[in-house]
Length: 247
Image 1: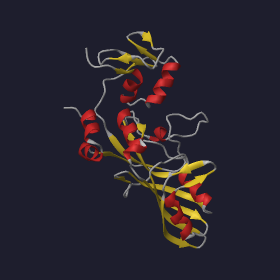
Image 2: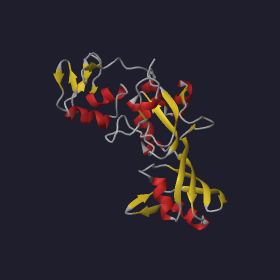
Image 3: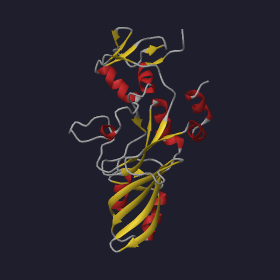
């Protein structure tokens, strides 16, 4: 019998969702193993066990893949939205593989979003320990004060939430609007908007231009481009590469 793994990890590796979401699916009774409904996320399964999610057998795991996507503003970064708003996945071609996003971008934020079919790869890229910087190009209303920008390197606390060191650079000031580059490593919820507001700037356009070693480049809005396996392997640790791309 092959080595066993927790059921949530098995489902996440298949690209259906994150591990945390898979645990919720277990609680909702949506997952079966060998004909029996799973009642605990602690259940461990082997490769030969038959896993069924929402009545459909889990496909054999495909090799890890990664895509760059230029997310337009106005789309939700989730598989479905309870308010009926359009999600990024609603706009993908019908034959596009099942994927999950690496982190999220707010509805009104545009720019680089990474997509993968592998839950382990997504988790690795999202973890703060990986140390990948997220860089944004920001348009904001207000007059930039250089001393306030520099102070962000020390970190800042806004409404009781502490944000670690942020690098903010003024690109240009044009009238009442300024363009800046902002680089951070945490990516907390609405971090750029909240921090900019705390120093007197109102963000009115936010574009993520890079995530770790991956760049938005000259992609057009809505475009999706797959990242070659060699580039993925060179971007991640050797241990993770060996885990994802076993011969």
